[in-house]
Image 1: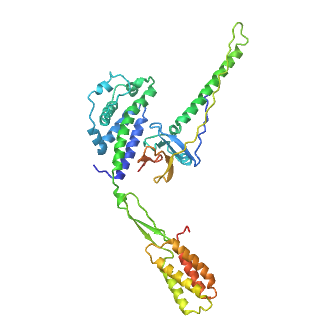
Image 2: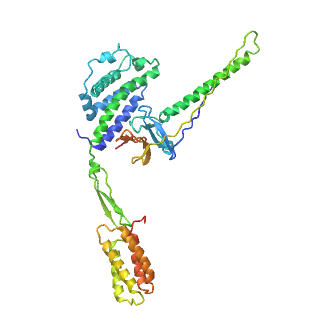
Image 3: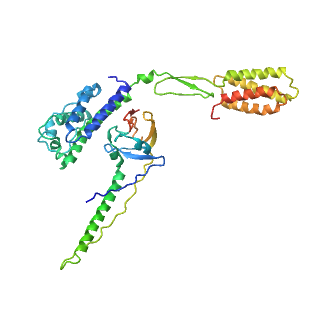
Length: 274
Length: 151
């Protein structure tokens, strides 16, 4: 039987709520609460199937009959036999009886006080029964699939960095769309502008070593930005080098704003935390 | 006789979590005190077995119970001592007989200590954090506030 994850979670919650109520019952509402629990089990195929598999006890009267000694229940070794026994006892307990509920529980486990014997009987019957069936639901949950999760298509927009985002949950796939506030096209454009400026403008005021350094830095930036996964460490060190070079080329006034523009674009391209 | 009330302090852990114990399965977990205060529902779900019960029962952990019993025993000893003292005083003027008694000793009461060492886990359903013991390799647990299964 395949039940999806969400439905199972709903069954689990409903079942636990009904079981909780049955466990907290008193003399007045114990029978009706046990009947509700049995009704829920019989109407839930997953649980019903488990009860059908559990063998019914052949000696119920000896264990839970009117004449039975009210010692604590001796449970069978096999879990499915235990479930069958508990189900049979709960049916007995839920039946209308001329005796009050407390009178049936009275003396169970050697307890002589009416208010104490009811919770003990409920814990030994409803409590153990609900533990069995809760485990059945939990096992089904662990083996379930959730179509709602599997067909999820999440779009994530990341601004301001080259951060690589790896997101996964269960078997879901996630399509991440990255939109950069200052992305690679702007950087490439700025690099090209500076390179062409260096050819056109009068650069006599700048040392040859400085110009060579600047060219190399621009090449590094262009190469790195064109990579599939640009490395932020390389871009960061290139940005720092550009900042130093800006001071050296300040003599050429038309160059400084271009370099500052490129530095600003690179700042936007780096992860926000750096 | 007027009923006596006892006040027992239950300390929070350094992050403001209070320890609770399921009255049924006896497993412990922690929730934020602020979450507990805001919770209108008188019942909460056990994070481990998922069965709900009254908030007050969850607060009565074994060590809280122990401290409460120590307080109660001392209170009883005090009441018996006071009663004996009154009898002694009233029998002082009687001819021929006298009641004597000694004060019952008051035992030292231990303090409730905060629970430490549980692992914090986020609950997406109620947007909060609880602390659980994952020692038994729990793969499924429940939100104490709404009862949703967490897996």
